[in-house]
View 1 (cartoon, rainbow, N blue to C red):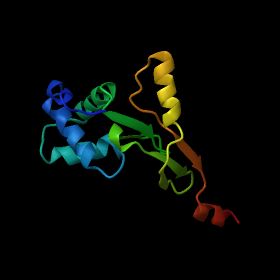
View 2 (spheres, one colour):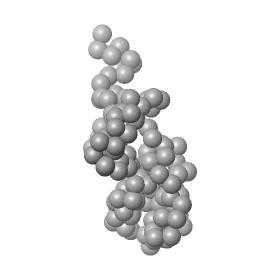
View 3 (cartoon, one colour):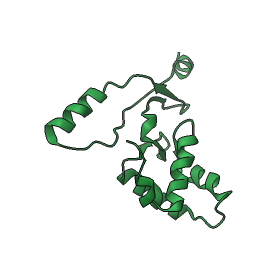
Length: 134
């Protein structure tokens, strides 16, 4: 979903959050986003970042996923990514192809439901952690 036109309805902080997320290589925690933004916005509170991320999610601009440590990680919807994550070392590997996109389109059509994003994560043991069990 494009942010063109919508960014005029966002606050300056929300626009900065969106720009910062667009420059990230992957998903980032709210705390790490807060640290990045505090260099420009000294008085920006962590609660403001959390509220801003929720607004961006409701606009369909940001998606979130839960890390193995229970922490929410945020990224832009345009960076449609899925992961396999090792339960032992917590390494996440990006999955290149998404098997859910076709289903998403079918759900939108069948139920007239606007899907902003979906999550698909797999959890298990990476090859290195499997070797330590042997």
